[in-house]
Image (cartoon, rainbow, N blue to C red; front, top):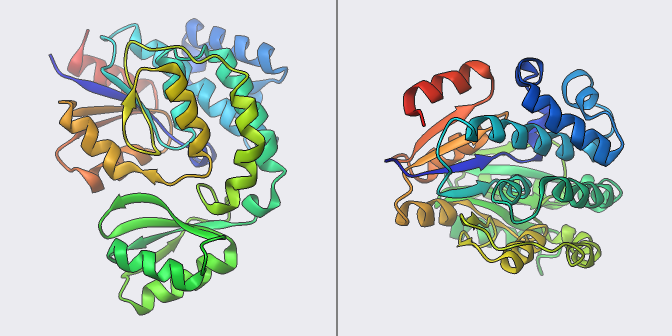
Length: 309
């Protein structure tokens, strides 16, 4: 029997489009969407599948709803996963499928957090960039030179020794990009102006969101939820909640997370949702991990034929 982790993508994949095929085909999927829409008081189907440019504060809510509903379809045909993981905001979906907090409460929590984020210009006006083929230690020194005191800039996502992501104010990211190129980086790839997530600029959001998290009673789980902030899995509800909260302003240690998964004997990741970003980034860390991506009905049918119940 194979051992696998179910995985969920981050906010940025929403803009790549959600497949409406599941909603159109499955009553179970529609029922979850209807319950989510009623809970939030918005037509999430409209935002998810017809007009994904409106109401940015609901984009992560829609993404989580889509991925959670997809998981329920998937889970009805296969054994329970051995772990749940999520990239950045995808970790909220992981907590929901592990049943640390019920799905609708997760949506309410995320909606409250997203409203804080969209009203935080320091974060939303910032940017991120992927630095390729530059030793991480050199990149850290570039960050220190570009932002002495590290108040505006961080290495926000750690993929490998020589491929990582910086995040911060536009000026700081531009400065560190120049320094990275001068120090031998092959590429510095802008990730757009989507925001300076997992950077020091998020500390104000962290201060505002911490008491909000405390309002929610996260339960212990049967399967571990692996945290982006330290790469470790936990079944303890209070620990899952604390790590989710701290993740807002902390770096994502994806390399550590994937290594910890493989040490536990998990050799397969099944990614549910748009983008294929988790599969792609996981292959950078550990090429031997089997990654499967489910984005539409054809993908779902194909993988179920391969692995079955």
